[in-house]
Image: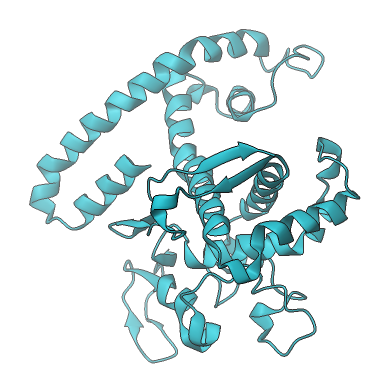
Length: 316
């Protein structure tokens, strides 16, 4: 993801003439990693392809041991709908693209939530509070796969608040709702005319940190900001109306409206599962030399990435 982001950031800031010869250099660099991916993926792809059979022969009974994962779904869809794209090169490139969005951004969110939990102000007692919530939700039992239903995941409101607060403060990008204007004479509420073909976006970072939305401490990580049920708080802070998957003008990590990221529902489960497993099985903290302070994130162009840090881990 870092290389793709650097490529986009550098080329976007260059004139067209410079892009014409610097762009191919980046492409050659990226192609090296694509070749490596194809070398690793090739044997698995060939094996799955043999197990898949022809579209006419395919059935659930034909390959009962076929793993149900992204690669298998790509092979099945291509064999049934787009046979011209059923080859290693195209499948590998699609997986590489999906890694940038679905996997790399999930990894970034996961790292950020762990760092924020560890560095949370002691007055919140964040780790103990999250552990208590898990004990109550599971009646003291160890977590297993059967626990993770939609209802049980939704019941973890404190973990949800921690995840939402993390995505608010540490969303991957400075911008949201990037859109291309497809019609003539589009005019904003302020009377600004947007030419057809131009690209517009919202600066989400100021919205997520603005005092008009988050009072005087919009820049501070408050793990249970969204657990204020029954208190006089704005609607977008209320436990009754705000969760990780709730989008709105004040919360834009996933965009907003009918094109909001559908993957946010999967991320909701992933972050809660990660936090639950980590806190039930391990004690975590920063090394003493950090002074209990979370190292700052790194900005690469408009990408907000977690820092390289060390964490001390001990099994409970």
